[in-house]
Length: 260
Image (tube, rainbow, N blue to C red; front, side, top):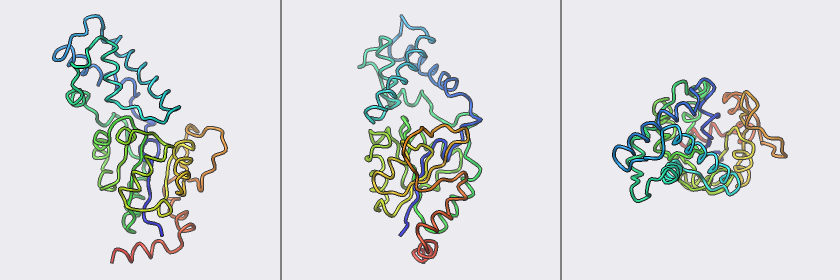
């Protein structure tokens, strides 16, 4: 019986096509961090703001390169710490909690939910399905929740929102999928996963026994040439329900009965 649908977040539920460039918005956040550290923690006397930004982006690139090989999740906390120590700040002077507040994670201008998301998620919830998020984000879910709240999506995912930064591994590592299933108290065979990456989402979900639906990005990215075959493909979330009907005949009636 179908009990839950789990989703990737970025490029699956959240549309970044019209968002302000990530590097530009990150620079705004990093300026706050740079000023705070100089004023309150430890002066970076040999590092100007531009050098600090370059060091951070280089650190991020290296962390994700390692992560792609090891599947160990990069985290904002670790990347900020590594950047500051590289710029001469003693580690014992670094206050990660204070940095997190100053970093001020939030909705990026132009970031939005895909139009079909607020149309389809209520339908799935109305049939009694649990919904969950499993994202490879380097930010903890407490940060990403701010975006979900601003986009009016948070209430659709009351219990299951899992970030790689909190688990320690990125998809396709099974640990991040297992965490979501454990939170919901279900088996892999009782859930379907929807995501845009064949390697991370489809391979990972299928690897632990979930049916996996591929939602390719409109520009064709997220679809490397490989032998990973999704169980289903959609261009809009509206196409998801017919797939569920084919895989789980009568799921709508069964889910509705559970609500009585």
